[in-house]
Length: 320
Image (tube, rainbow, N blue to C red; front, side, top):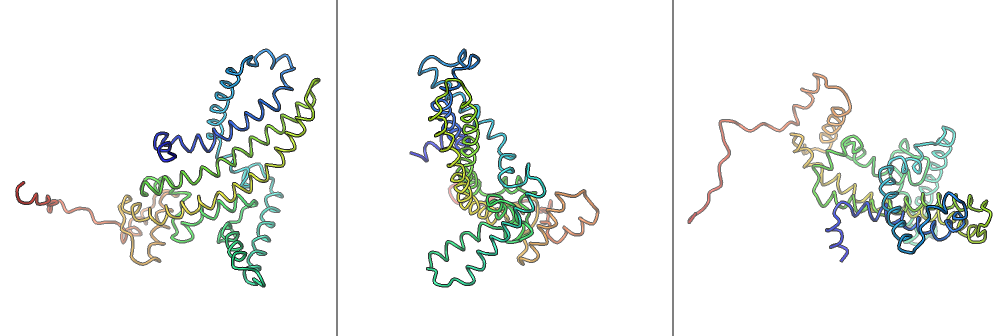
């Protein structure tokens, strides 16, 4: 049944599950826990729906509109949680040092397992895999490192910079690989949207405490409960990147050859030569053209078809 729904919704599945559904949950909490206290104000009381049907319609419209807005703002929303946006330099540096120290602790625990069981050692390796291989790529937050690990995967293994060539890679990769990336990211989007919504509703609940006839016990419980759940959703978003990372890794591994062919290149047999080729492709995409690129790309360019040797049509066989 889920596969049928995904097929019907198509590309809207990620939008609905990743952004609209958690927004609907947050709007519902606001309507039933916070809004009754705010209805006492004249400005809100005049526009508040009178019937249950009107309230349900308001919930649906607000969830859809706010979900679409959050989806459009997903890049800055993620960057705040990753530590790249609105972070002062001192906080960024402190966060990077803290994450580096945490990674070193995990490495030491793996090197000296002591009496830990195989399951505990596997969990330690799982935590280590949520960090980028290159310490120079460390981000100041756990979510930033969990995402950075698969952002650097293509460059670390093949010198294929997926940040620069993502659109080209997405267009050339197999369709199943692209769908896996979109589907696997939905879980992380869900928890990120839930996290931001909880933060906003908790702040509104604290503001509503100042209303004259506010239901203070309900508002206090709502604010405390939502605030306590925010770290849980953040940790869940970090865990959700595991499947996302696996999907991106598969897309890079399976999409390299189709991407090379789409660019008119031949994938070298030697991995070292392939790394050199992708480094040239990345430079070609990021920097202005130079005449030296002609000689540099010559060993990797596919030979054009011979105009004097047209392609043979397949033999239709007997009885055609």
